[in-house]
Image 1 (cartoon, rainbow, N blue to C red):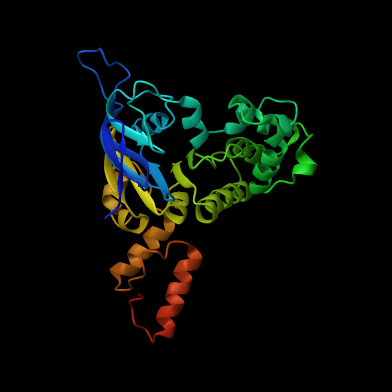
Image 2 (image 1 turned 180 degrees about the vertical axis):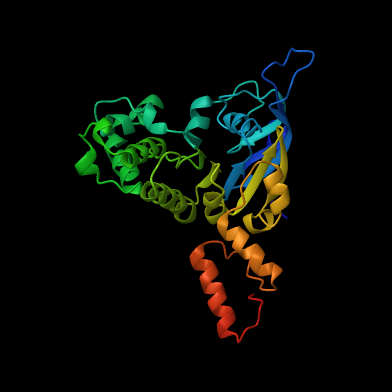
Length: 305
């Protein structure tokens, strides 16, 4: 049984990064016929998880995510993020936003400074962090995203490639060392190499550093191969909350919600229909090939444990 802690007005499990109970939100709260962008959402995202949130446009996922660092204030229900009660009368927004790093879609459009160094250091400066630490923090953040600090520090961010700009923008969020990283379509508009580089950074942060990752994506192949849990929003509510393999077995239901079934999920579903059952953690092409080779080594036993 997991331990719990009292957070002002409600009890939150100690290992929760995001804990929501019956959260609802309307952009027209005083309207007699108000429509809810978020409707009675309850979920518990544990520290260190890699969670994907998906759903068609207008399903409520982006509005819910904006609650996580109080870009949208809580109207109804209970919500704790990084141990902070966001329904409290006073919320330390600076502390919250240092803990929850938000990477918006096309974050490179928010680059503005003359140099990469100045852009990356905007966060520490804005949060009142010790100026003496800026260079060390910027070096660490840029190294994390695979960039050479000494090479790029004095470059204009606008002289970089699209993928490099995206990584600089990500470094500008990582520089404050958030424990939760929220990504809205982090690979949108990038070529395959750029996508791979960004997802590699995100996976390293999750697996090596224990950063909780919450990613919104319309690319179901990306979701399937990276997330360990998928939450599907529909009409402002949570329709499904399952590991990727379990979710994408539900092909008809997924398609009915306007989502695509990942290529590898389709392949594994066809294998299962033919009696070949692979482990649920065989998700990528490499993992599926390894599982099939194991079946062959087992002499044709069609189940791999």
